[in-house]
Amino acid sequence: MNTPLLLFVESNTTGTGRQFAQRARALGAEPVLLGADPGRYPYAAEDEVRAVVVDTADGDALWAAVQRLAAGTRVAGVLSSSEYYVATAAELAARLGLPGPSADAVRACRDKSVQRRTLAEAGVPVPWFSVAGEVAEAVAAAQWQGAPVVVKPVQGSGSLGVRLCRDTGEVVSHAKELLGVTANERGLSTPARVLVEQYLTGPEFSVEVFGEDAVVTVAKHVGAPPVFVETGHDVPAVLPASEAAALVDSAVHAVKALGLGWGAAHVELRLDGGVARVIEVNPRLAGGMIPELVRRARGVDLVGAQVRAGLGLPVDLTDTSDAAGAAAIRFLTADTDTVLGDTDAAEAAALAVPGVVDAALYRPPGTRVGPAEDFRGRLGHVIAVAAGPGEAGRAADTARTLGLATALEPASAKETMPV
Image (cartoon, rainbow, N blue to C red):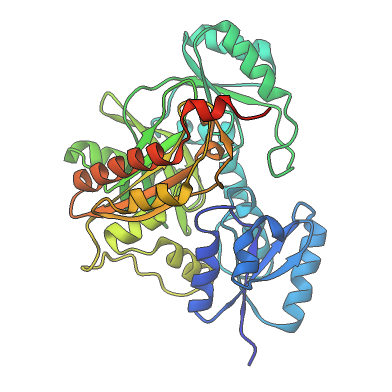
């Protein structure tokens, strides 16, 4: 009997993409990657994942490719580890009569303006916001709210295009830039609208939801404004009971209000005077290697759970007793324009810190780097585990400092580089 297929529509370039394929094989399914350019995912070739080249932005071409696959072997599920293609995967699954979320709900959720309106109408606490299709509308909204405000695209991921604007001039400049963008980094068309929203300064968290159940609350570290680069995460977050309950209540309420409730959802929130306001709901697993932190800290395999759900198998999210208890990740970022030096030595220095279980630099020595504007500017990561979040966080902070000190060339090296 042929091995059933689990189809993946595109992938994320870092993080869980490889893990999705590994979990599929462990469950007896063959992973098949459908992609316009499978070569952008090095793990596919390295792990010998079968790849089918197809224009994933062309619905008819994609459906034809799926039908050809289904004609020879049973397709057991369709998923995507990329936020940009979750709705596409859900639509294909529905056409095949396979498990998945509502494609309409996912598509609506991915438009942050539609999402915000839906949440506000359902009584979910959210920041004040306004939707603008022209620069003048963005300026009027910012003036009504009062600066500073956050201006960001209605679609996107990884903090791309999210910026704190402190005055009218900055609103004009950033809104004009965003409204002039017609396609995202994947080449997919983007709506010509932006969100202008209240700037919340309270601590930021995420609640990882599976189905309609909260799995864990994660403390988030964010870099300095005007950009909002995620620089680290701690699992689990340490909070007073009332604040922990408020975060979970808002997150689960949001997921239900948006008509999701199947598989994973990553809900980002900020505490604002004791109120847990939802910044956004992502109809997918968390990025930033949060699923790996949850696995190490709690023994809950969220990637495996999503794959099991996609295959129509039972899902068990029970904590395991052999988990570490807590885990933390810190991303390495440069403060100034500089050059990467000995990355192997940097990884070794980080791994020498007690509690550190993973360290990786993403770019080769000699690469010019600068301050991160979004997730693409992160240079590497370190992960630490411990019995408690404080201990894990301190180990990760120490490893990050050592890794950066070893990896980044001194200013003199940068200055002498030929242009």
